[in-house]
Amino acid sequence: MTTEHDQCYESDLTALRGRADQGDADAVDELIELAAELGDMNELRRLAETGNATATDQLIELAVEQEDLGELRRLADRGNSTAAEVLEELSGE
Image (tube, rainbow, N blue to C red; front, side):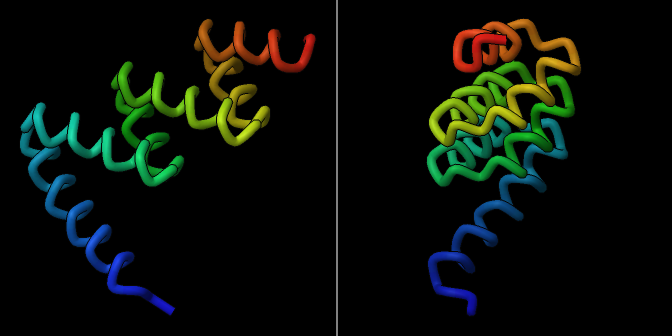
């Protein structure tokens, strides 16, 4: 069941993505902020995959909050040293 909140988020997300895809740096920042606030790891992951360091940092922060060692491991395996350090601290690896 889709709620009004979900529809509003999807509408905001679509609009921000459109602006971001056109090179609007403010829209990218807003998209990252919105995704982080709502715990949307998929959106943060998508933005991080484009090389956005802020999105990657937010993704790491969210993974720590959610105790998602798998996400930290995925980022570490892709060469992210921050994720590797956090993973080591959390898991003793």
